Image (tube, rainbow, N blue to C red; front, side, top):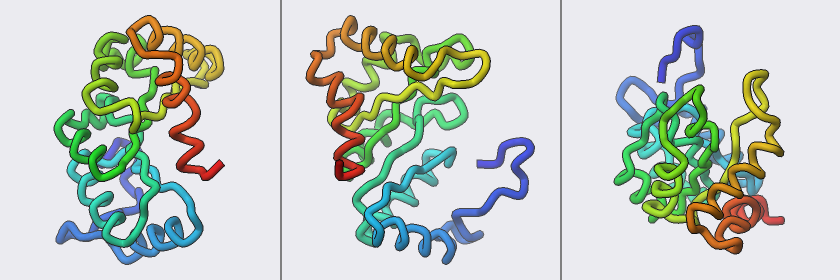
Length: 169
């Protein structure tokens, strides 16, 4: 993805669409050290290609970073395919804030249900001057997911257990 001001960003893909040697080297390092690969702000098709190759290379700890933000707008059907591959999704509460207005809280809850709470990591992406403190935001996020019909065990899994599993703690 090319965002204004980031014209000199590192490239993940070569001109032919394959991963660069540097990207494959990073995947090897992440895999060999038991680390977690996050996709950042790649376009949905790039996330698809990156994660497919990373899995081919033996990497099993992958997070699709806030797929619901307008800058990414990953289609739900792709999210479901990625979830079947074992990819986790960092679902950030800020997508339902006035700053982004990408999804309503009900829409965010529906997205989690569609793709699966077992593949969801709840986060806020808060901490900027115009947003709540991250801890306050996460508490609010948990409360609205409970109010949206998720059980306490499901929310606990999304807030902590899924991430802990990726980190082996």
